[in-house]
Image 1: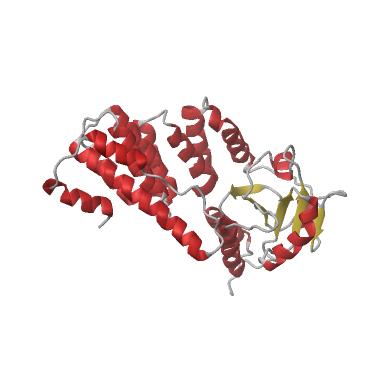
Image 2 (image 1 turned 180 degrees about the vertical axis):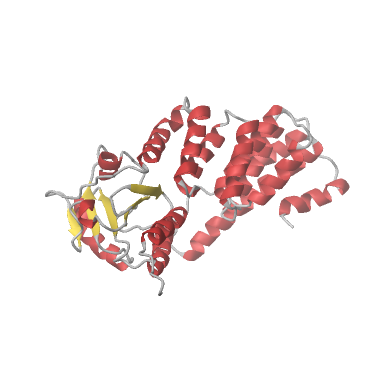
Length: 359
């Protein structure tokens, strides 16, 4: 049982405290600002401190909701409680269960909005939710709070990182445009998402001819036309010399699994690494090889004003995977390889020559 639930179980035998006292403790909870990450022990201590602070605020939020259901700050406090479940514990089931209980009581609009926002957040933060669950949660949140910014963010993330089919990506992008097209903070990301959605089913001409500022590893092609006749992947990760984060490492693990099913001759993959520091090229070559990046890899020099992704694909956000068929037509894309794998498997299965049956 969680700390918050333990507190609730004890509440009937405890004297009721004033809301001001509960909120003073709630507001006084502090979180560690940064971990040096220098050792596993330091990182574990940092994460433990965050969890402890989150559980303390969650317990206080539960106490307020139990004893002072009409307090003007209740919606704000519940919103934080549910947000912490999504972001710290990654426990979407608790968010759904508790918000279901509140929504069944016809709460005030502020609580309805808090429930919608945090259910949308849970939809994209809980790693155990299936895609159908994620989409259903965000759609329901959209109905109850159609102008809640977090719902717009969730629609965007579902389309970019979780949806597996172009039609579904297009549907989610259309919903985001319809409900949140006027929100400034989504404008650039939404425009990029729509460019990607519109590119599916069309030839994608990418050039890697390079100039004095570019470099390649293991004979990267000058253009994708050199690979015409077989499907290929293009990957644009976030990599900086001296740092390859856990998300990138996870993607490499997924890629290794993909390679077991689809060897390189059947599915060439070009990794395009954007490099902002010319002096980092040499150590980055060594690091990429050590971390298991499969050649060919193409290093693209860039500035904050221009990059390969922006110039040729129209996207600023790194981490993109592009799947092209043997005619150079874009068949799928995602910022998560796991979401793109079904499209890869289907494309390669469809393009395998059928075995003739013996007569």
